[in-house]
Length: 65
Image 1 (cartoon, one colour):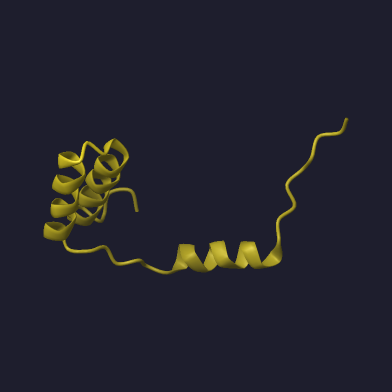
Image 2 (cartoon, rainbow, N blue to C red):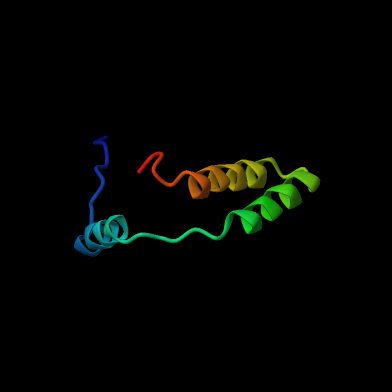
């Protein structure tokens, strides 16, 4: 059997490029901290990790840009 290769669509490439060019504003740090505390209280590991990463990104936007 032959391996299947990924076929990219022109609209997909254009959408990825447009998303890379546009800045997506993050919510304020206090709102993200509230989400972090809520996820932690619910023992939601994935939510805790996501909220923690967003807090760091919002607090230091030059990191990882």
